[in-house]
Length: 227
Image (cartoon, rainbow, N blue to C red):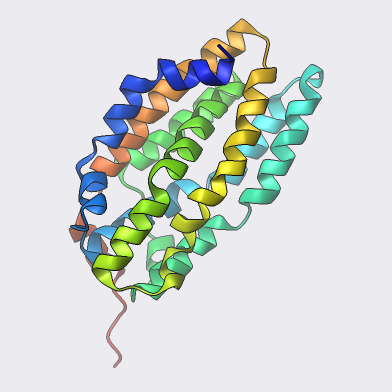
């Protein structure tokens, strides 16, 4: 079994915790209301804006014996730059105020997930960040396109309101292949254990992000009425 296959197998229980978040089930059943979708996008913004800084921090702490991995991180940085702005644009196309989202605070669960990522990179082992990559990219290809189709069908929103979800759906399959190849090149058992440990934690943390989403949160992001 390759290390990537082991990641998939050994995180099955934690992945189920994430996938059982009620809002994911409602999205698939076309039961999500507009405010829930906007509230989801707000939390996505609050963790996606950290993706490039986290990648940069990881690349800075990798040893010179893993230069090949630093080069891969540079590719990730190029791919991920600016995605948080896509989310704000999606929010605008939903009829809400992206700037208000940018100025808001994340939910506790979102803040905790980001903090855990920074702490792992800086205090424990920078390769632990790949546990987060496993969770976010793996979850994206599994549900993003389906969720986007279901939500759009229910709410009648324009295509421009789904640039984040659709860009992280089927299009991320190439990213997952790239990620799998990277993971299978990691030979250190200590690094492998850390990545697996962090993947399990991130499945739980990301599941809590989904569980923290509440339609009422979107009320703060409504556009102000014209004077």
